[in-house]
Length: 171
Ligand SMILES: [Cu+2]
Image (cartoon, rainbow, N blue to C red; front, side, top):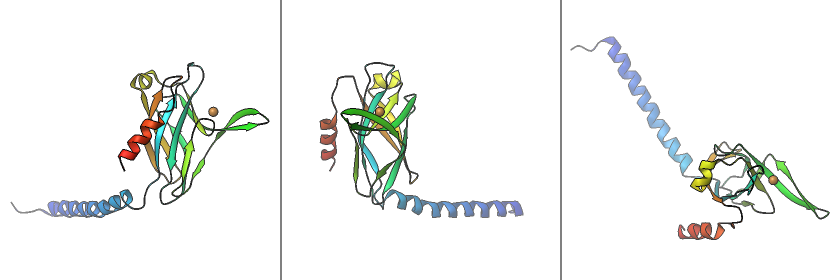
């Protein structure tokens, strides 16, 4: 069968899109390797004993080679998440919402009991029975980090020892 004009056009279009794919692949690899990305670990949630009051969330953010900011946290497993800061003034402790937190290059920012924390309203029953919930951390550089937070029942402590042991084993 003789090749028609149409087939020639289609072939050249296919060749063009293959060429684009070949160009795209090295770019994708470059963004995964160098430079070191910002990441989140030791994420956990202290479940509120009362469904009408919010639970608290904690984690550690590790800055990559470039500084960025944490702009917010989303999850499908709760009604609402806010970033808060606790402070003590004249012996009174209070907290206020914060809209962004700097994560310096190669620095560490901890959200920990008594300080910065996540307020989480309406943690989903499915997540509670599973013992963990996935959260999405939104960075100013456009990265979205998916992190599983361990859900601790009311009264249970911080699962830090376990997390740290795992982290060291990996290094
Ligand atoms: Cu709060």
